[in-house]
Amino acid sequence: MKKKSLLSGVIPLLLSVALCACGGDKGTEGAGTAQESQAGGKTAQEPSSAEESSNTLSEGTPVPGGSVIFGMTQDLASLDPHVETDAGTRDVVFNLYEGLVKPASTGDLVPAVASGYTVSDDAKVYTFTLRDGITFHDGTPVTIEDVKYSIDRYAEIQGESSAFSIVADASVKDEKTIEVTLKESYSEFLPMMTLAIIPQANEDPVKSPVGTGPFKFVSYTPGQNIVMEKYDGYWQEGVPSLDTVQFKFIADVDAAYMELQAGSIDILKYLTTAQAQTIGPDYNIVEGSMNLVHGMYLNSGEGPLSDTRVRQALCYGVDRDAINGFIFGGKSHIIGSHMIPNMSKYYEPEAETVYSYDPEKAKSLLAEAGYADGFDLVITVPSSYSQHVDTAQIIADQLSQIGVRTTLNQVDWSTWLEDVYKGGNFEATVIGFDGTMVPSDLIMKYVTGNSKNFMHYSNEEYDKVFEEAFATIDDAKKTELYKECQMILARDAAAVFIEDPANLVAVRKNLAGYTFYPTAAEDMAALYRVAE
Image (cartoon, rainbow, N blue to C red; front, top):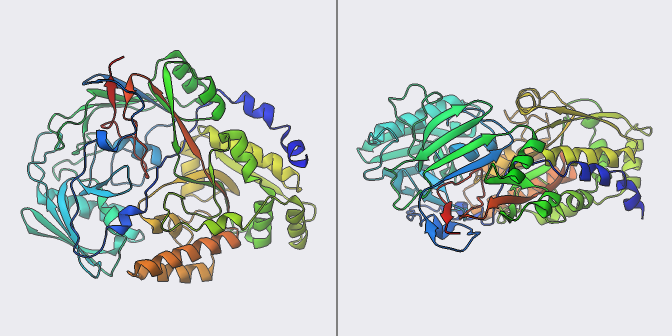
C-alpha cells in the first residue's frame, strides 16, 4: 500500500505524456559472442544475407524498391565518422560507412571492407585482407592506402587519451594486406576495427560523406532530415532492397508521435507501453531491448554526492521496479551496475540485488552522512528523450519521500552533450549509455581521470581491478575481473543503475526485416517492402 501511495501522483503524469516519443539506443541478445571469436589465428566468416539475420514483422512476397521515412527525435552530431558522436548519429551513419569488420545482429563481428582477418596468439597483431572489388560510393576502388589513411586519421582524431592509443602501427604489407600492431596485448581490439574506411582523397567527409555502406549520401538539412539512396555498387549481393531512406528529425516528442498516428512516418522507436497500445492498425509493434545502461548518473566530485553513503541512500530511495512497471509495462531488465544484460558473458547478475527499495534505510544513511533533513538536488535531463524525462519525474517523486528536494532541469540534446557529458557541469542526470561490442568501453568511464568520466568518479580499488582486467588476455580471468568491477560500482553506488529498457518500435505493416542490434545501428539494408 505504501508503494501505491508513493506513486499515486505519478500516474496522471505518465498518462499526460502518453503521446511522447522516446529516445535512446537499442540491442538484442548475443552481444558477447564477438569477443569469444578473437582467439589467435582464427579467420572470420563471410556475413549472411540481410534477410537471414533480420526479425521479419510481416509475411508476404518481398517487393524490391520503395522508400522509408524513419522518425527520430534528435538531429545528427556530425557526418564525420571518425569523431566522437552520440548513439543516435551512429544509428544513421551505420548505413553510409563500414569498417574492416562490422557488427551483425547476432553480436558477432563479420568481414566488411576486409574479406577476412587473423589475430596473433598474443593478441598483439591483427592482420586484415582487403575485399576484392569493393568500391566507395563515388565509384572509386578502395585501396589498402585508403585503409591505412582511415586508421591513422581515426587515431589522430581520437587522441592519446582514447583506448585506440593502444595502436603502435598500421603497416601496409602488400596491396591487399594491412597489419595492425598493438603496443601491448589486447584481446578486445577487434571491435575497434569497425571504424569507417573513407577515401584518402576526400578532404571534407562532413560536407561530402563517402563510404562503402549499402546506402550513399544524397542530402542533409540540419533540423529536418538526411536522405540516402541505394548504392548499386554495394559489395554484398541482394542488398539493399529499398531505393531511398529518409531519417526525419522531429525534436518535439509529441509531434513525432502525432506524425506516426497521421501516417507521415513509417518507423518510430522507443514507444511507451501506452503509446504501443494506442497506435493505429497500420503498424506492427516489435519488442526488443534498448541495450542501454539506463540510470541516474551522479557527480561524485563534490558536495553531498561525494559521500558514498549519500549515493547509497539514493539507490535505496529509487524504486526501479516501479519505474519499469509504469513506463515500460514491466518489460525492462532491472540492472545494478554498468553492464548490459545482453553482454551475458561478462554481465554480473548479482549486482542487481545489492539494493532494494528501502526508504527507511535511505533516510538512515542520509542522517549518518549528516543530511538528516535531506538536501537539494538538481536533475538535468535531455527534453527530447521521453523515457529519460519520465524516469526523472518518477525519481523526483520517490526521492521526496526520503527528504531529497529535487529540481528537474530539462535541456535540449546539444546543451546536455556540451554542459553535462563534455563539461561535467551537473549534479545528477538521467540518461542511458548504449551498447558496445567492447566490454571495457562500458566500464572504462569510471576509471579515475578517464576522458569519458564525466561523473568525476574515483575509486582506487576500482582503478586497480580494471587495469588488471584490461591488460590480461586470459579470457576467463578478464571475465572474472570485469564482474568484480561491476560489484565495486554497485557497492560504492557510483550511479543509480536502473534498467536496460524495453524498446517498442512501431513499423508500418508493409515493411519487413526490422532488426535489433547489440550496438547503435538502424540497418536500413535489412528492411524491405512486402506485398499487401
